[in-house]
Amino acid sequence: MAGLSLSQHRRHSYEWCFNEAARLDDQVPTCRRALRVRETADQQLDSALDLMRRLPPQKIEKNLSDLIDLVPGLCEELLSSVDQPLKIATDKKCGKDYLLCDYNRDGDSYRSPWSNNYEPPLEDGALPSERLRKLEVDANNAFDQYREMYFEGGVSSVYLWDLDHGFAGVVLIKKGGDGSKKIMGSWDSIHVVEVQLFEGRG
Image 1 (cartoon, rainbow, N blue to C red):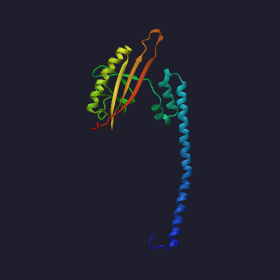
Image 2: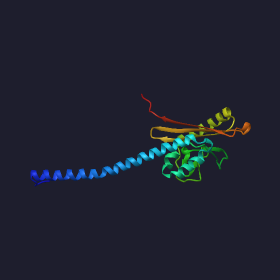
Image 3: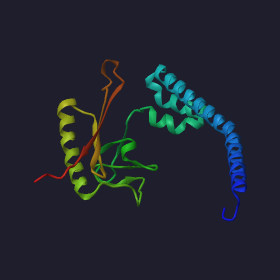
Image 4: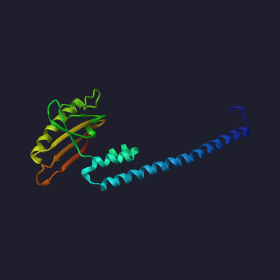
């Protein structure tokens, strides 16, 4: 404000402070409303998760779908918070079964750990690096043998993905009841790991 007297400079400063205070004061109700909306959404999510814990686990997929239809605004939070039963798919290329989860999903397609292909086909789907892919193949073969020897059946899958300073992975195992003695349920195992790589010293 070159050329202004001290009194004029002060007046401009006071006017600016007054206008800024008025602007912030106008924003307070908006902020309060946003906080109330956020609190309401958090309360709804807590109630929804509490309800899911009380409903029969055998119908978790239907219950989750009904809950999302009831409160569509919580769709993303519910899908990421509620563990659903692992589903089985068959690799069309080699005929081997694999498990579906968020860790091998890209959009609406799922990657097979056996062929490294997506189904339905996806041109630009995320893939592990060449080095990590070799490790993924070895891990799937190892856990496939472990699962067969220890559980005498079921399906296992291992998925690995690259990180900035290492890699992460998930080991999935699904074992279903054989139907004898009215055993109709299934058992799912999900283990997520993260490996950080450090350069050697000396």
